[in-house]
Length: 225
Image (cartoon, rainbow, N blue to C red; front, side):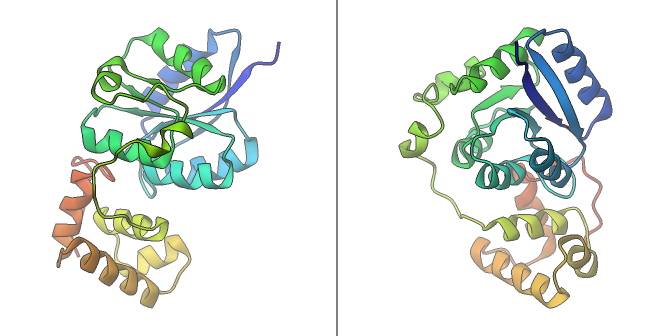
């Protein structure tokens, strides 16, 4: 029997180890890799080609939502399950938009994770019951959900999302440029575009916005520059 290969993307080591322990007892599931950042998750997904990625939302350098968008663009056959402590509509809206196959709350019972892995591997969707009740139609496949109504909001490009997260994490323009391998001038242009799109005119405001939409957690230590 070929086992379902799974990549775990979670920045908290204890949580990641717990997820691995839960899945390792399942005879039909194999954890093939672990990632601590969204950027590492992308690299390992390209390298290991897991069938399913279990992705936390709030991770350093690149959040789980943007990592999911980039993974599915590069490897559309990959199934992604978002794992989060937050079940707010704003988070779920973004997950639906990114094309993830599932969304689990961290408060869910242990057996739910393995069930979700099996369901999304079959091509189905799997959402925590409390979320599914609020969003009719989530039982459809990700492709079929493309036409579901979404809350209107500002759409940021992948690069803008990356720059926004690094700004919110307190990175200076020089650090952001080095992390993304772009010029400082390009970083400044992206920062200007973000402020125009979001109608926000200072770094503190960008940081508050990033927290409000789940790009980073409020507990992240930041130095506003």
